[in-house]
Structures are given as structure tokens and as C-alpha cells.
Amino acid sequence: MTPHAKFTAAMTAVPLVAILRGLPSTDAVEVGRALVAQGLTIIEVPLNSPQPLTSIEALAAALPDAFVGAGTVLTPQQVRDVHAAGGRLIVSPHFNAEVVQTALRLGLVCLPGVMTPSEAFAALAAGADALKLFPAEIITPAAVKALRAVLPGDALLLPVGGITPASMDAYRAAGASGFGLGSALYRPGMAAADVARQAAVFVRAWRRIGA
Image (cartoon, rainbow, N blue to C red):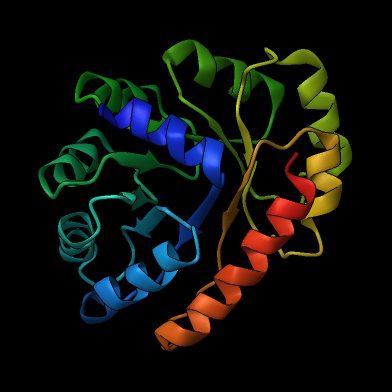
């Protein structure tokens, strides 16, 4: 299965991206297994985490059913590094056309960060697979609804930043396709069992509102 087909399947099942910022590489596989056991199979390790490429390599090898990649990807060289480590997902806090194009040339899935209609249309024109709406703390459900009204109907919109199970309803009603989950799901030092419990809460919330 190609990375794009695998991403589509994961988004169809549970379109929630687990953002493991600060993940120690020694905890990567245990935390990853806890997420996958609860149905969260899209896993992002931000590059400003400790030894992120080591974590990505370990997760990709241990969890073949998961879709693993990196966040906070800022440069084309970082895209190449993630690819070499076995990552297949590139997530950025911003839109950089070179980052998107490098990811596409390597066959990777790319989710650039956008906040405005201009950024969103430019990212889609560059070939982005989905749009990370960031930071969601200032991109309200009303703003998502406005974006949804003008963007192509099949554009995937994922609010990221401060998302909780309680806040998902309003964003989903406004047209969000899924979410990136950060500190409400995982914080450095959390035991895998605690991560699993948080993941289960998010998955239940999605299944309640996702139809």
C-alpha cells in the first residue's frame, strides 16, 4: 500500500493525529503501541523532540500498521531525513512550498500548517494532502466554517492546537475533517497506560461526532 493510500485508510478509520512532542526515544514503541491499541494509528513525532529520527525509525519498524512521521518539519533537508528514517508523514507549522514539493517527490504525505485562505489555497495548489489549521486556539469553529465554504469540498481540514474531546464537537460541525491532538493526549513523562486512557477518550469522542 502506498503512503497516500495508507493515509487515506487511516483518515477514514479514525482521523486523529497523535502528536508526541517531547517523546523520549526510549518510550517511543511502548507509547506507540498504546495508541494503536486504542485505534489511533497516525503518529507524529515533532522534530524538536529528543532524538526524533530514532523514535520515528523505531515506531515505523515496530508498528507496521501505523502511519508514522514527523512534525515541525521546516526544511527540505528535514523531509529527506524523515524519509530516510522510515517516516511517511510530513507535518509543518507553516506552509513552505519547497517542503511540500520535496515530500511529494519522495512519495510522502504532507500536511502544511495554514491559517488564512491565501495560505490554504497556496498549500493545496502545491500538492498538500491535507491542511493543518494552526493554531486552533485562534482559528475558531466559525473560521473553519468560513474556510470550508470557499475551499474545495474534498480538502481535508485538521485543526491543531489546544484540541480537547469537549472542543471537537463545534469544530466537526463547522467542517473539520479530523484533528491533531497534542498535550491533551500526550505529555513527556506520561506512562503508556495513561496515554492509552487519553487516546480512548478521544476515539470515543470522534466516534460520537464523526459521522
